[in-house]
Length: 174
Image (tube, rainbow, N blue to C red):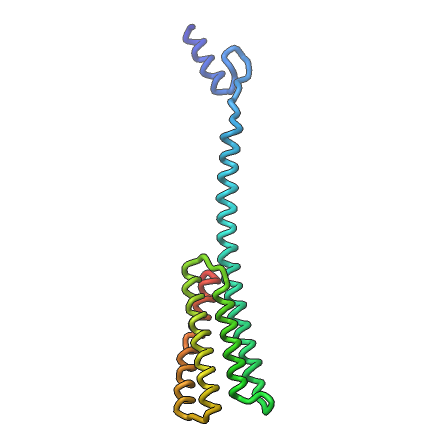
């Protein structure tokens, strides 16, 4: 092969041509493309499902928290002669027990959300107990016990605003 033929052969290979003028065949490997497509699809699905999962978990937790506040307001605003304060407190305690149970029932995989879930659940449980204690003290006309229950109720509900603010900030991505 002469120098001009070697140069011509190199030029044809660069242009995708076989040295004898035939088109150069590119090797098609369907397994390689399928594997790339499969890996890309799996990564995309995982990324999307993880994002939706956190959002879904946030929405469920926020919904339980909002429902607990709404239900407790309805019960405590209904204090009347046919629904005295002690009974209203028991009903509100039942609302908090329900909220605690519902909050615990949410399947949370995000570690930060698990911490919020535990905090909300504990707050609802402590609030419920303080309300029950207050109802008993109220019925027994035990002023000291009522004051102690009221202080416990205030302590139990103190973290609510911060918990709600932190959960909202975390869920919105701030």
